[in-house]
Image (cartoon, rainbow, N blue to C red; front, top):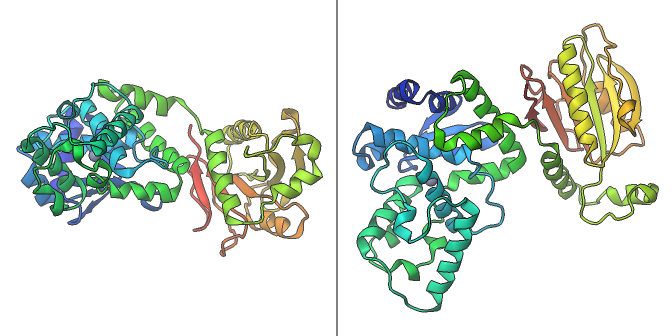
Length: 405
Ligand SMILES: [Zn+2]
């Protein structure tokens, strides 16, 4: 721990934004990680590091800070969540090209540099990905002139360095153009798979939260090279369009019998051109108990308004210690939130209500600070807890996004 603490203190002095990011992450010594890696496993931001890997690969402390910066940039720039169905190895390489151009500290020799691969500077990850794919296809077609083995050794150093020992390839003086780039860099960022599991939208929300916090603490002083990523994250609120698309898609995959078919028959006029759009039947529960401040309540209202834009059918349930009001949200004016309760909060009535009622929502979205009793067993309908800034998820089950101020 001392090792990483020392580096954090240096960052705090030199580039505090990165230090504040790092302090929000769980620091885990990990021998399987040759130098360092980031992960959002189970929704917890984690920073893995291997002290001897740092010592072996970095010539000095500045290069160590460069490695940390490299890892944090992957998070900030969304590299860990944007891969989708792309080939992992090529995506990894493209991400390193971008990250290493943005790192402001010196980097260890083994860093993968775009300059060594005969590609232009300043492109986006997606653009490098396409170029690398083309390059690889060309390489597979016929033997072409490649570069000398020295460069490949260095590059492969990072393959070894960042994630896993891949000794089969590291000896080879093979020409790069003829190599299977996807195979070669497949293991460069394996911890990113944890973000996939979490769901990219929730992972994004998590990163956003971290960045906002670090941004506030460092009083807006951020390294120039990453400022546009940071500004993007800091300015935007919850991206409901994306959260919904992701969350609802996953919900549907869960209950194989798609409920929208029923909805479709019942409300054909509202839903004429349904194909793969994300029309769905949502139950939005709102905690109107005394522990919710009026500012938070208006925040809830604002978020619900934006959920509405997803064209879902929305049933609103207002609940404190008991259900106070149930209504279908057809237009903005229907939403008229005010306090009913006198302090008590209980989440059980909403789930009891769903169990008994005819509404069979595709998903439940509960806006709350999370303080109150809730069913201990996972509810059979996918549930998303939207938690206020200072709140916490009331139970283990369900997904969570944090409201941002
Ligand atoms: Zn990397």
